[in-house]
Length: 154
Ligand code: IDP
Ligand code: MG
Image 1 (cartoon, helix red, strand yellow):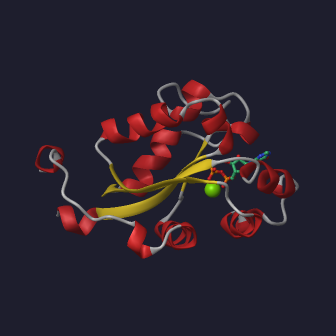
Image 2 (tube, protein in one colour):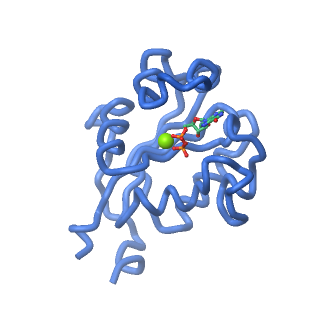
């Protein structure tokens, strides 16, 4: 049961989250939920990586500003693991547009503008696999038991 539903997803605290000193707040919400940090790194994303990361939006008018913004300063990249981690992380982040993001979500509680919504999380298993491979070497990702695993899963 636990093994079958186990997923990994790519999560990023974008440069606005780093500048606004929200890294701890965001990581804390993820940890408290019961999801596991399998990898974590801060770096300035290269333009090539940013274009690849957001390639589904390459024809949209906000693509250029989005790539400039996400490469404008350090961001924090994570691989987050847990049962249904992909859907759970999207729920923790909240709707893309902060106007629609519910209170209790990261974007609902902490943001006001779609172009400065502080977090990213993969939206499906295929994008999670693609984004993890884009931003991390397999050797950077840790599989390890956590002390509270048996209290998190039936
Ligand atoms: P997501 O981050 O919730 O997956 P996407 O639709 O994949 O949302 O868009 C990627 C990112 O691009 C958003 O998080 C947001 O920062 C930015 N973005 C999306 N749509 C717009 C827009 O209409 N104007 C400005 N920025 C946008
Ligand atoms: Mg997206």
